[in-house]
Picture 1 (cartoon, one colour):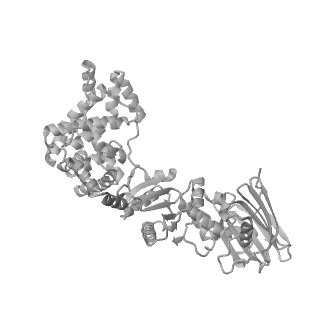
Picture 2: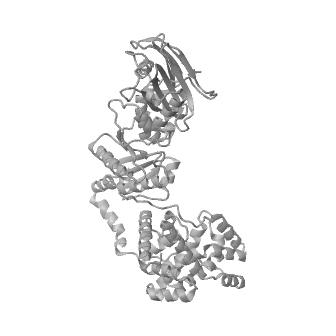
Picture 3: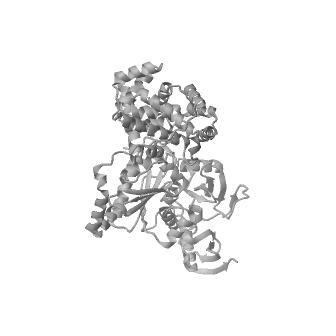
Length: 432
Length: 191
């Protein structure tokens, strides 16, 4: 008997057991309508200990403020704040004893996950346990999207790192399910004004804002506003498609699920089929999952029989969004399905190859696009996280990068020499 | 161990608008509203009363008195409350007064329960065993929390308010009680 069936049978049993007083009640009310006074709940006898509560409170005051402050610091003051992000975002505040003071939803999905559970006074592990259970039950964590981000606010102290590691282990073990295993990202978040401002602007947690900033550091072509709406699993996929820069503070356990998408192997098959190339003939292969123009897409690159192929596929449907082939004689052939809504020219991807047989930069011994972008941003005095609508194209003939981007109310144009990184031309215009 | 708190599987539909309408009609001395109120809430009231009093006759008395009080005081209902919560609060207060008058709970043995339930209604034997198990093998709090959720469709937060218990207590007790009752029933082989 399932739990639901048990409840149903209990309900039915009480229904059958309830006497039918309907007619009797109607008769009595119709015959002699009387005003009946509602009775309050009887007062329970006051326990002896409660009679002395006032005296105890007075004594506590007399003992001195010192012990009261100590009590407050240990039990009532927020010692750590932990946020859990999936797509639902939830913040947990705990005291020094790691007892929960408050659990708060930071978005509508978070409210769904918390439901009517109240964790005040619960231990942190029980709270996390229940929240992860609810995330699973509501389908926010599944084999299609298995990533969760744990962010612990505070400086990188031993206590903070200890809490981060403990939660990572706990949640990782909870996500070893029969159907899938989870991917856990964890980090310590140091609050800064700029991080807080971005979190507030996009209605996301500080932790998610910091994760996005780290991805922007990996790939300057992404912009904060484009990444903010993505789920943690999507961000984790983007993060894992490029090597993390040195000094990254994000710990990662497990692999982000790409089962909601075509998969790299299937994406390659689609591209081979379209190109009329046998899989065995394809060499120098590179497949990356990227986010551009409002959708996840696979970029598939390979060479076969002296021709270099580049494809962009919708990661969910496998639709070919763009294809390009380049022969050894320099002849280029580019096809893109009509796309009225395409907002910008095709972007040169900046992420470095992750496989040893991947293709090199546009031209050997030159800057890659990420480096060119960093040079332009540095010259403009802006950080990658402040940039919007960045575009970067490589002029093969001149061996230079054409870079355009916006930051605040200004639009910037740069031309950067790909050989030595010098800025050839630059222009900035402030919007009215 | 993964704790899965089930909070959204209470099948009784939220008939708040219907009950509010009935209370408005009752406030206008529409006697048919009493019949409708009784039809839609009697099981929850009786289940809670039986859970508290553990005595079928006393529960029936409270069931009767509760609806007289509801009909008589319908004009005092404030729409910011859920109507069923208001009705169950009245029922619970009546139960507590009856308990105090009785000084102690007149608990019946399992055999006596079977007899009372059998004589009072034409209940199937499975129902009798289920109710007897629920009434004799669960603690007062366990029984009240389970019936309020399973029969009245109350959310845990509403149960905590009605029974003046901390929500974590309600959550953990509800979870354990379902397991306990299921284990008891499986042991009794009525599943």
